[in-house]
Image (cartoon, rainbow, N blue to C red):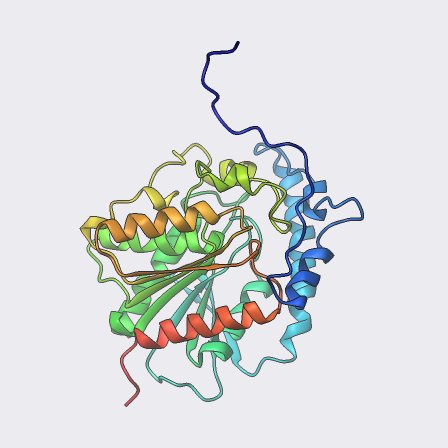
Length: 332
């Protein structure tokens, strides 16, 4: 008889059905992301080795073309105007809504994309989308990314833009937000701004944030392949981004930051099938332990990035808009 305690739970092979507890639109979105055998389509591709520069450049070009084509379909529906400027060496897409709800407020958007993808046209359209959805002027930071520009280039770009914003706006009129990799940079930017003695913004919005590049949370194992959009961990991306830096440093993994020294009200979102679910749960607890106001929103069966237009996504957008406007001064 084996007397050595088990180090985990042995789960028999089984199919995990898409639940009927979500909208039919959400169910359809999940089905579109698997093949006839039930394997997530995104699990069929392996990323290059972190040292394969040319391989990453090819993958980056292909991914950005695919994301750009998908986002371009939405561009015709957007009303916000947008201009691209350079701020102390960083590229920023500034989107202005047709009828701003608060004239002197700014939403800073940090795009997702595994710390490698999602720049250019995707970032520009994303800024317009946020301007439309929130009724606020949006600054979308088109931060530099690897393999050409590893850490700390992206964070340096974010800091340069944030310093410029503080010259033009009161910090209480600035909200910072990020999705996935953008959530990493948004939280890291606030930790670094605090460490540098800069005033912090009014609030922070983190959507399925990639706040632990060490990938130490439970869901990185539990939700592998269950998350049909992000079926496998992103360690190759993380190592490429960090170069030789310590993945556990708070500027790379904000989850491990010291929030007792001051932080801002935070909105955190994830889903029960999100590979990054543990990131959201652990960050929420870390903030609550030191009495930082934090809302945690977990959506049923939602994978990383949402359902791509289902009613649940509309509900999330409404929650974000409510949170953002609740933390801005009321309009004059």
